[in-house]
Image (cartoon, rainbow, N blue to C red; front, side):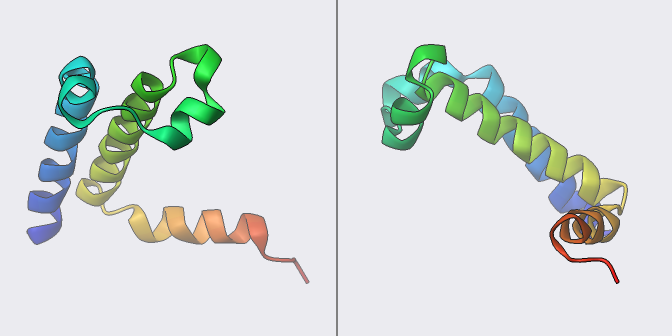
Length: 82
């Protein structure tokens, strides 16, 4: 039950980060990392949206109880096969 609660919190937070990107830019300022890496594509705005989409994805994984499978798959990409 707690995974559903935390998953919903992550989805709601991700939604508001994606939806209110301009408000975040005005109140929190620019992110230097994204400005240097993505300056031609929107910089901090794209960074805020990527963070929000990441939270949405994590929230969906938490609600559907697929976090373990996703982490195992992600780790298998970096582990050598025998």
